[in-house]
Image (cartoon, rainbow, N blue to C red; front, side, top):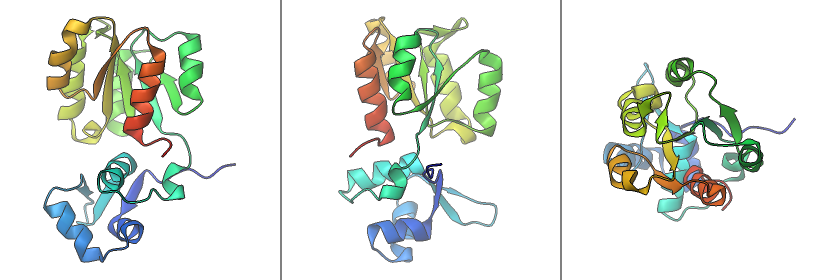
Length: 186
């Protein structure tokens, strides 16, 4: 069985990746250069996707261990067909939402790396879902991709915190946006 990339990294691991002192990592975190959270014991932790963002932004090489495994993405769009899901499954661990309420509850306990939302999911507007995902601490880091043909929603969903609006049915553009945001490939 292939190893999986760590979902959470310590400050020491990040310092080793960047070849800097541990105090430098603490300074960067405190100055807002990278997203982090603290454990109950006050130790810094960094999510894989935020670490990849940071490493790319500042030109650090991406360690192989961060590229192992597949990031998880949940499809809440109710738009993706079998062909689209198979295309995404090559690079991602894709899960389809069967019940929006259950999926939203799960966001609090084991959030994915990203979600794909249609203009509405079970009658809830994409902007409302995006804001709700980002207002909750456990899911604040989740990347939200709006997959719809309703281009007029672009400004509204981006202001709500979505990573991108991708015009359906362009699954290639969706794949490109998601893999880029999640740090798949180099």
